[in-house]
Image (cartoon, rainbow over the protein chains, first blue to last red):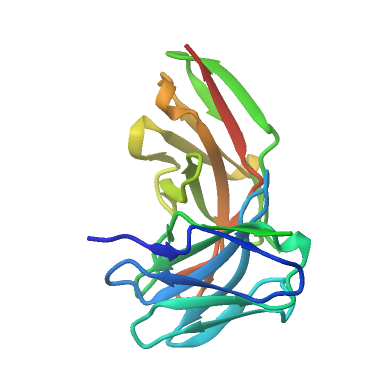
Length: 112
Length: 115
């Protein structure tokens, strides 16, 4: 049973560019959350998707957007990249009726 | 708003010694509390969780944590540390939204294990 899978594992972008990160949830899970983890920090909540809708959002600018597909997979898009967007981006999924989050291994984004 | 404080950035212990990682939280209601572990280059793995009931919670890999409401704490303990326990440990407190948990994480404590 595959867990949460994220792609790509590493990514290097230039300031001002746009990036798309992808996540496939664990089998049986219908809710996907995205977190940003800067170096030496704990994960910060970006947003959560359920039934293809953004259910809740953290304190991140509109440059951060997402999408959830009918198969529950999800994308995180970041526009107009800044140096400060360099971080590990973690996707987490959870099943119906709630449960602790199951995390993927993350995508390491470097903005130069 | 909820918050989590992990006062120790780094903890160094010898292999076989006992371990306690501190976590204090701020939350307006009865909290849901979690401990996660992150090895280098990996995502977060759930060690244990507290939702209600017995305040001493057992987790995986021999870890346990005790919820103390009066101290707003949820400290993680292990009686004998193994070299493979070296990792980053995160405490989290979570509200729910429609039944799904959205935890707020502390900044983490890095555990270093000496042979």
